[in-house]
Length: 435
Length: 63
Image (cartoon, rainbow over the protein chains, first blue to last red):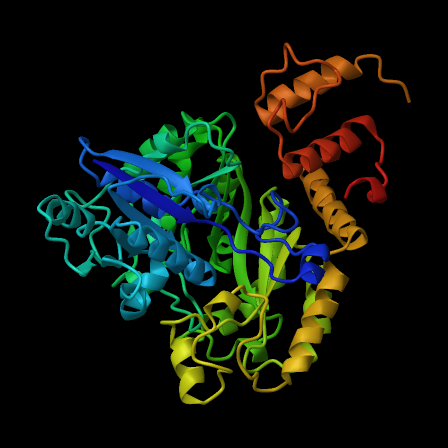
């Protein structure tokens, strides 16, 4: 038996104008048109959950583009983000028309299983752990069910844990690899469409398992750059220090997402730098307290806003750069937010910055609220979930103000002069530590 | 200011700070392709060079 696992990695800027402005996510590897292109860790995990007597082929959507022929498989599994889900459905329809059963999974499918079920023989909800082995057994017996519910907890514990098949990436042209250390995030921001939506609580992988995965991935590629596929890596500082101490001997270069509280702990910051952490992405969201109101249930980000500048300086002084993320179009932001973000970026000296527009992804509390308030332009707009398209009516500014303000801000921030200024700021921090 | 030992100093710097084996690397080697230095490591290298050699690279050349 041969199973094809097809990934739809990467999200693309839809307009040439934005691409030319140099929009960058997360920033220092791929500037330009393709925002992010990482292998699908979810499908590598699915491959690991597949019995060894079954041949597994990992493919990217780009490799299947030809309309003339489809690579032959006995079963196809497709995973996709929201922005490319229609493309995934079209591919699923093609395979099914050719008589090949299709399974769909991933975040979007977990949140909208009825929609996905129209294009699949079966859908997998939540994690593949706890679902995929049962699905394969049923498929072998010719009794595939329309829906399998994976685990929402305990995914890193035996017997559920699966060691991702990094070996399937050998010889492929990625410049970054992903490893996951946790799922979920206790901050629970209203807009978040990450793994928190498929977990029942925050889950942390034991350090020894993460290290083993990193070593396995390092065997696939020379000088790999690692991106941790976490929502918030350093929620648990004790675990964080244990993890960082364990990876120092591996001599990695890596990136992750976390929150501003990493700056509270000097020991953690020292270990971050020593372990080869190149950059942390922090969701600052808005430059002032007003804009951050009611973003998370405990107003945690609003309360920490006053610490932003000092914390960024402290982190970058260690040599670890900050990618400061801002969301435009939040309910408490007025048009003044655009110059405020520009000024904050200049004052803070964050080496990289990521500017996106508020996006109500399906299944999020934000989507439900805006839908109830009648502020969504239409109920279904998945191809416009690019983080750069406006799909709702903002509260304190017009759609035109939001769109033109975003373009203006891109021009102000993503240009060579400003980038050189941020680089110089960072170099001076590095030099200050040398002296 | 002259730096007669610039080459050996550079090799030492790359080995010490960036943990790279530079014994067989040519002088015109590509830092990114051959040594695996990312853009951030290159910035750090420039910062160290400015400090050690007492020079200052033009900001316009950084981007």
